[in-house]
View 1 (spheres, rainbow, N blue to C red):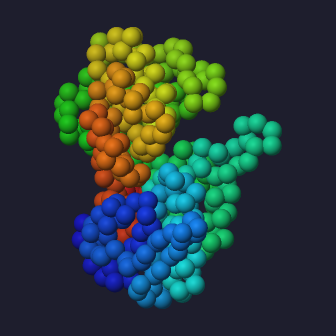
View 2 (cartoon, rainbow, N blue to C red; view 1 turned 60 degrees about the horizontal axis):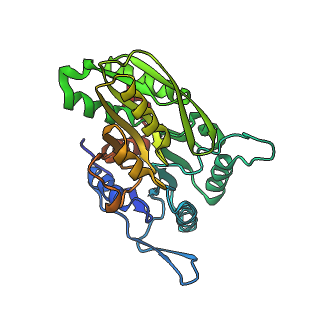
View 3 (cartoon, rainbow, N blue to C red; view 1 turned 180 degrees about the vertical axis):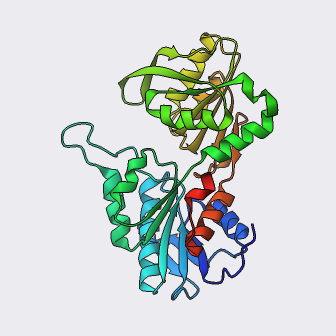
Amino acid sequence: MNYSGRGNIKIFSCNANRDLAEEMAQCLGLKLGQAEVAHFSDGEISVKIDETIRGADVYIVQSTSYPVNDNLMELLIMIDAMKRASAGRITAVMPYYGYARQDRKARARDPISAKLVANILTVAGADRVLTMDLHCAQIQGFFDIPVDHLLGAPVLTNYYRDKYGENINEFVAVSPDLGSVGRTRNFATRLEIPLAIVDKRRPKANVSEIMNIIGDVKGQRVILVDDMIDTAGTITNAANALKEKGAIEVDACCTHAVLSGEALNKIEKSAISELLVLNTISLPPEKCISKIKVLSVAKVFAEAINRIHEGTSVSKLFE
């Protein structure tokens, strides 16, 4: 990618994704903006912008992953600081959009927190949001500002195509639940491989029970596909069930590696051979177990930022 005339773009980072932000800036031929995001002794967040941004096209990189509320507040306060410093346009670059699973009223008197976060970002002063693989694509409609929704599937499928070459036709793409069928179908179409579905019933929160497998996986190598892995119950139960049904190898992939609670132990003990994830969420060293491989999305985000700045189509990235 050749990026020239990028003088009016400025890339800043809060604390959640600094390595990814630095890589994005390098892809664009820029240095990361000079800013400090710190915490006072009482927990309040302090933001200092150490360079002029008047009239600049500013991009603030921050995933609202754990600790979710601290990271969200860092982003909001930096947006406010940029607005008050007369930035020309402020784009919140959120590789992982926290609260995305609270996108509807599942029960009476439930909040719709994904909509609330959208409102807060807009009120804080964001002019645009750039994100990847929202848990529910309709969350884009919660915003009254433009949302550019990137896809992780091309990065994941390119890896498998390069790794397995012509042998990729030995694989079956598997959706770990009915909610991920559309995503897995897109994945399978890109690799031109068959599709299977794990039908599960969840008796209570964070507990999944495998019921049935729709499709033929006996004697096949399979790739489980999901947008995020949190407690890893769904993906590991699905992997174990696929093994029991005769799958000879089980790989898994996702965009967002939340990996909370006992997720790492479940993955280690499961039938999964390799878990492929993207770096939308920064993984600390203790979570980088041998089964996990991390791919970078910096080039995708850098290209999207370039296209937004130039006013050209972002969707053509995925055609």
